[in-house]
Length: 146
Image (cartoon, rainbow, N blue to C red; front, side):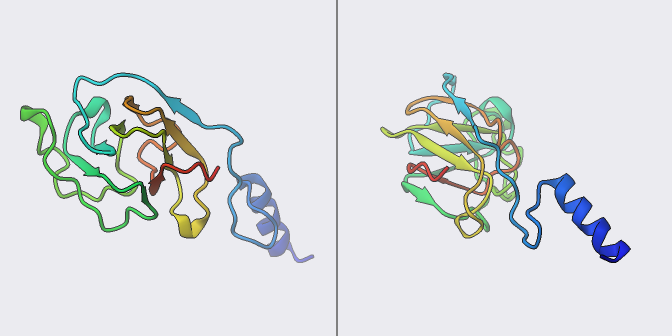
């Protein structure tokens, strides 16, 4: 094995990459978000740009969004910070989530096309700062693909 191939194999092993593929290793467990919020979410899902529901929000009533690419934050709930992050991409930028739906919600680190991956489970009607997927979310679903 050449020196370059040895270094690549060592790097892949160190980073948790499977030899010969680009699949990332996924943690076996995930965070569960089960806190309350001062800001009610009247949609199935609400993401905020800053922790604790502060800043701009993105909301949806869809049971699943397989890739948040192209989605932008809109006006938030708190007057003085409602425009912080306004117009920013939602994908890989949310810090907080609220589940206004009747089913538990799963926020994934990957989009569907990349295999969903690690996730934060958000109990129905609960809210909190993202854990595993903090500023690293790409999709969500009411289905546990983990």
